[in-house]
Length: 396
Image (cartoon, rainbow, N blue to C red; front, side, top):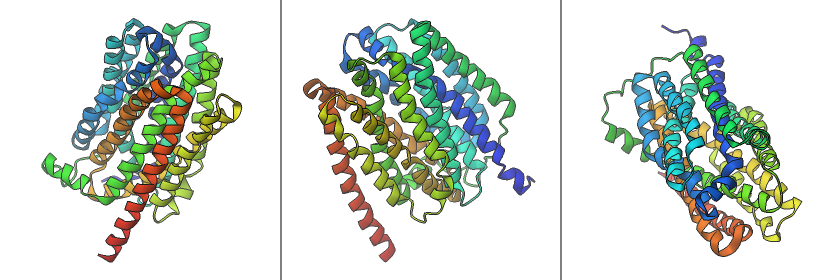
């Protein structure tokens, strides 16, 4: 039998965090090239579709791969995902139209669905009860740090050596992650007492949880917003005269400040008994900070957009700590995180695509203002519903 110290070993959480960091580092590489993708396909309106292409694949692949990892282990699923990820990275070089770029993004989404959520589940396998906020802050911070360094490195390589070399580097990072996980990751026995439970019953139990539905809704609106910002903020910056390196630099600040705040928030998060209230507050404030886009192209708009990203990033450790604790009790870590990822995918699909259509009529600046009001009103209504359901639950 495993000792308690091994069962909850901190090193495995950092293994998972490092894997997430190295894998996501390459994904951020494509961000500075989104304006170039718009030129390849002949329209800025399709940038959101290209960016969100990977999310379409994740809608179906993430829950399946996560539930499979509950039965056969996290490591084999992650390794297969990294193999696909590495190959896909090189395919960006030969994709020059909307169909091929969208296809590559789909396959990229399939690969990421086998890496990121399963890596999070791997870390939760080794997390002590009551320390879910600490683990979520380490994992979320590593994800944002990798995503933040990706754009600036990708933009620099693109400016200095050319776009293709950035994708070669991206593929190399996937191969490095594959070697790393093969050597250092050690699966726990993930077979649970409910492993023979029918999949449909597992799904019903997950979606019947008030905690899951609340976390899902909040995370959807955060990813809706971040998908739009990540897709169209580079266009805003390039239209303002910034180079690819500068675009990558601003996006790196956007992500690194978010990651540093998350790293420092672990103990703070675990002190809250109800972690959804601060989640709503951070989410609503992050939407309000997009309003300065109304005033046009100036330094304050850039600062406000970066601060919005910092606020939205703080939502993750709170909702993951609340949801992770419940998932561990129900022994459905993989499945719960997998279905939570639907919020990630739906947000990245509907956000960039719908706001891209809005931008055709309003322009990019007013599009962000529309996004601001949409998110503020929606989250305010959802918070009111949540408080009412919480009161009814306590009364019951």
